[in-house]
Length: 219
Image (cartoon, rainbow, N blue to C red; front, side):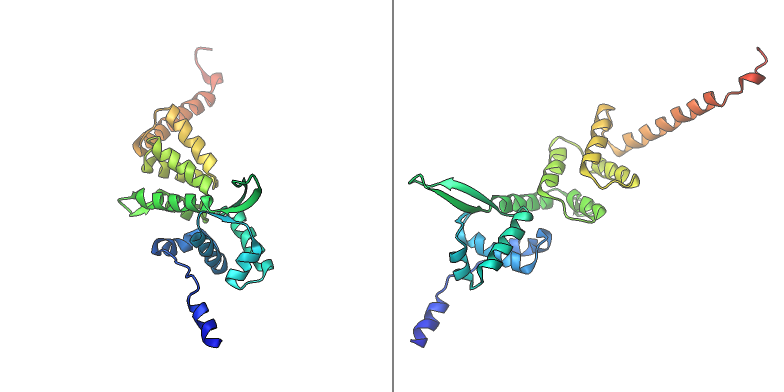
């Protein structure tokens, strides 16, 4: 009897963790319990029937903790619950990993878009400046900049501008890039040139404002 139970335990399905996902773990911004639970879900497929009792039995964990882990991963935008009708037209609730796969896709793009000079991607540079991990939506915003042809160097300049003004917000950077685009600014050199021209115009206005009309000989 004991031998049979031991064999049943040894035959239990393994949880496989791909090496790439393991390497991504620090970037996923979650605890070890959440990561192991996510890997359990990953091994079940992209859509898992939401049945806390089965999950609890599989993992040997009480339902209360299972619900806490699901809640944590939902808040982290790594999983979501979807209501779907099956073939018998019966409504069932599923755990979807579509957000998790989107996050993995963004992390892959992060590596692909590495800056050759510094071997650091623009995503990582922004995260370092902001002091936090970018959300999936923020990754999409940065990706949209790159897809539209905005250079990494120009994004860096906009990031510097935002940081100088004490703003850690991608919407602010997006506005800077938009205004620069209207002015035809495409390179850091264009940015410097625009700053010089702005200072010159500002100085001209100051000179006009400070002109002492009372000492003008013509009047």
